[in-house]
Amino acid sequence: MSRAVEETNRAMLRARDAMDRAYAQPLDTPTLAKIAHVSEAHFIRTFRATFGETPHRYLQRRRVERAMYLLLHTDQDVTQVCYAVGFGSLGTFSRTFRQIVGASPTDYRKRRTMPAAPVPSCFTKAWTRPSSFG
Amino acid sequence: MTMNAISRSQIYVLDQDEALDFYIGKLGLELNTDQDLGFMRWLTVNVPGDREREILLEKPGPPNLDPVTAEQVRELLTKGAAGGFLFMTTDDAHKTYEELVAKGVDITDEPMERPYGIDFGIRDPFGNRIRIGQMFERP
Image (cartoon, rainbow over all chains, first blue to last red; front, side):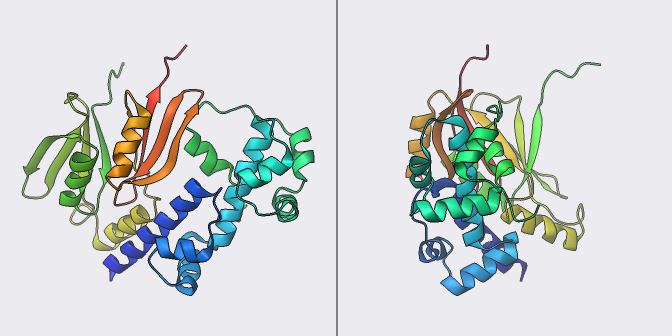
């Protein structure tokens, strides 16, 4: 019983790691389900049960976090940032960004400053991802 | 009162033989101690040549933990939420990365240059995180 849970958890974690690593690629549900060795429907359900949010939501917020980072720490324009973090269209990017962050990418860049934290970047990535948990 | 070193760290593993395959076979660490104490298998590894700093590869279970708690630890570990995190350094991050990719190790973060060095992230077979960095000299 517990072995099965552990194997499932580890497989879901492998898919989540893939999102953290390869967010810039067009990671769709079939690709992620394949990484986790389960069917698509099973993957979405199980991922949510394991991590408290759907894979889509997790990836969306990973991409927005990376976009927030690029907006504050690079000179790339909004279109470049949009494609660099894996969004397929500028419209989707702007809408999603505004929905999650509460400001447009351009306004966010103008209003916010965040010094680069002197810690391993995986912590920054993990702790500044706008999650669904408040 | 002055502490002067971190001599041992501990992480949880689900299977100690599999842990040896990974930490020695893939990461190239050295076996430090593998002793059956009767009540537990005391298993530690170290970075090659650095026997004074050991990593204890401990299997969660009774009687130290009750079965339900042990199961919770195992579940959190496989979710990547048990807290195990090792930081190691290397002379050549890109080369080490390529070698680990060739060995099929789970990569969480590809090598990138940061203000503090070039580093990348991997995960062990159980869910613990490991970060490997080629660090710049600190100012």
